[in-house]
Length: 451
Image 1 (cartoon, one colour):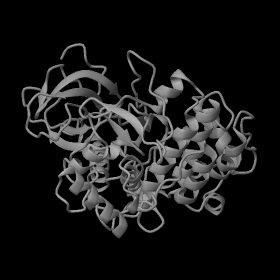
Image 2: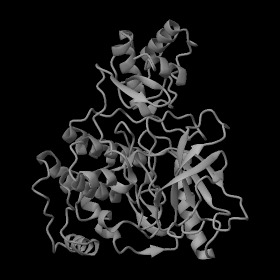
Image 3: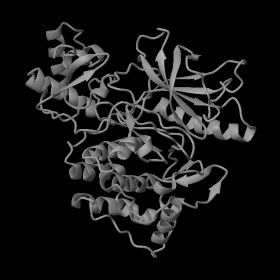
């Protein structure tokens, strides 16, 4: 392991962790290193062939450092185990390294996560004002809404923590700063990325539980992120992070005006201005919650209105996942590093396929097929009583691809009409006619491999 000291957790290529074999380094930050990995041992047929392994050195360091690292790791693991939402990165497993011959690795916690095509950070580096910016922002806002709806605050929303699938679908990631709400507040570590931190949290009061934050902190972060993605510049003046933080504090005190870039599209100016209200109280008055913000963002982006959120369920451990192209993992620490694509420009997001004209997608594992929303929702099993974007996709495919008009309109609610239409379709395809859309029914609905 000589010559790898620049990595927070140096791991030699070819090292085995459980069924995984470590390949190339993807990213490294202050407290973790992320490696690509391939499945070297067929333990579980539902696991993808490739994943990202996030190594956290929770077995070494000083006692004080260990407590901090374990807290950050536990936050991320708890959220990813408990929440299952279309716009949040997926975790397949957690492992612990047991290797006394490698003291730098022994005891390390390893998160097995989706592997990425790239991050929004990489996209903006390639093109500071991507044409797909509005479509990306609509998906990012949907992710924030899903997170808040589940009772969590992200706490570190920024381009490096927005990850992209090959087809342009967005995932929020890096939840080591996330915090579960206790009433109106949550408690997070005393750390954030200053450029995306609201003024009230730049120099917060910190007690033994950490910093008190609220969902409005993510709203501010989204406003900064939207301005950056649409104009290529930060909304507050300054040539450095420190200068922009000072400007944010002056703005909060009324001594600095918010001067939005003239390149900000007209439909976005009011949205960004409201997200960047100088105080929590003013922000909430203008943007009551992420759901209200999402509808405004979708309208400004010209995106399809997202469906009602599905009923929340516990996350199934190592659930089967269809991976269109797996997501990159942002790393822990104040100097998190993301990786760009190596051989081609980062994939840019496109608007979801329309309901009436399902679009063709292509996937390494499942071949070609149709999607009327986002192909990354394959792993969701849906049944009568459920609701959400995956229900709407099934309704669209039933009605407009398979001609079963009895499903009714694509209203994202799995009611009796949808149940009856699914049963009709399953009988037609020779499947178990139980009215439940599982992996086999999804495959038939999307005509995988038959396009």
